[in-house]
Image (cartoon, rainbow, N blue to C red; front, side):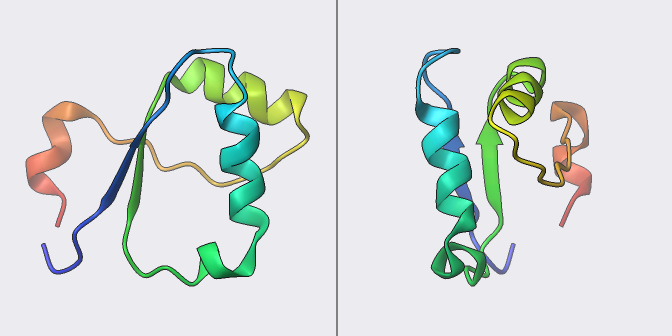
Length: 71
């Protein structure tokens, strides 16, 4: 892999982590990062928090069995 990814693991399910995470993506400096960002979290909770906090981001879901196929 040319660019090493940034891996972030969400902590407590209903903590303020997602709120801070979404606000960070509103900043222009974060959007200029060329490395892929991998968030390890529950998709169900992530989508609930996005709806609750009125954020709309595109999410690409990776499955463990497909990780070796992705470059």
